[in-house]
Length: 112
Length: 117
Image (cartoon, rainbow over all chains, first blue to last red; front, side, top):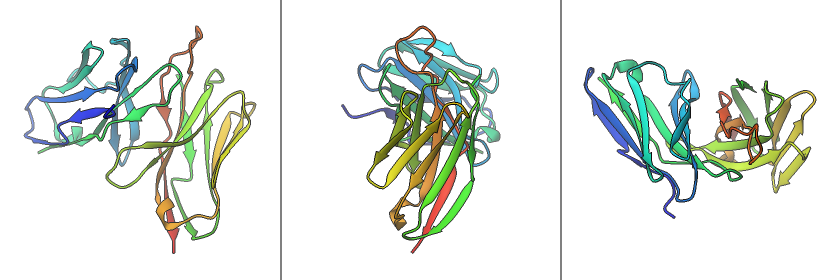
């Protein structure tokens, strides 16, 4: 398995634009996590899914953020409209019931 | 919900010395405590983990201890080397196939470890 795959690796966008981040978890993992990493707040859990169902989205900062997992091999995190304070590195991670969580390489988002 | 606190936020040691990072958690039902290492510009990667049925686990120069009563766990790195320099994160989760398991993985705020040659 190639591990957790995220795209794009880097995204620069203008304030107000829609941003979509993508994640492909490791095959067979039934948990998928979206984290946001900033210097000030560390690794914040935004939302996580179990068997494609959102379990806890209490970390999603605002209604501008939404996440979906239409099938076991794909998830998206969308920000609409984006703002400069959304600039961060966004990580996707996946795990099984009794396995460790593996992280993707992250998407570095810059909103100007 | 679970809250994980981590100290110190930065740690500087001389090469060959030991480094200790400490974490506390709030949810007594948490049973899985991993430690991740993140090098600059890279993804966090698991270096060691411990489950609540074990008090200590060791892997070469790294070890983790768990005190369930006090709800704290620690990472110990001995004989530190410059390549140990990175940010280290602790985390807590309720893991496994039992009814109360959520697998929700909450991280501490990280410790920047600098090993001086």
